[in-house]
Length: 312
Image 1 (cartoon, rainbow, N blue to C red):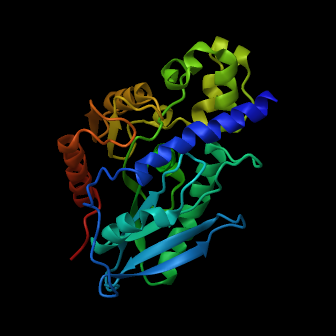
Image 2: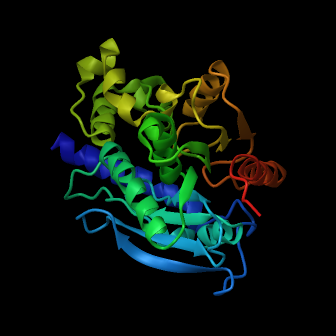
């Protein structure tokens, strides 16, 4: 019974993060491009594994004359329980218009009837990336570097790949960017759901997210941290981590703002080139700090130009 309650709670509360895509656009429409065959071509629903959701869309530039291209993977939002790669069509078209090969990847969403977790989703993304690069090569686009990015849940998965899995990536991961993705799972940070005051609830929720059983006793003695490490992006940051551009709202009620401070500290302590934007009047949708949102978007463009320069 408790397991079902925790699963249902996970689905209800994290589905709220779809607000990032559904009710507000923090980019103010900036990430859009006039799209036509003169800009690029979309190859949709390319499978990367056997699961029903294991497909990606590939956006390739019209100019296929360069020796190599940068790849930008952008992962969709939706609280790990909803969303689709098509939600980010504008972003992917914009990235492609800048000369990048761009990819949106679907992953198995958590439901009441399956055991998908943040951990299994992160492993699906890891498995997909080589297939994305292979598909691009078959179309005549050789990939020599990549950026991984996303919003909310997609941002969390992007950071996990960038910090945890980059060493095994087929090409160097040179940048990660995104907004409002949960970066760590320390009990004391998750007061937005009261988990800081309830060991049993915390064990249940973290078990669902990590895909492994965590007991209240492990919460109490701190040993749970080793079990949530595979899904805690900030715990994988080191001196070799990719440059990063992130944005968080201090009034976020979907993912804890406090977890973002752990990410900021990890990036600082390891000397990573990063930009951290704190929106003091905003929640998960980054809706109330327009000027800072624009600074964040400008920083994304700046870092793309710096680390993902497109050859003339």
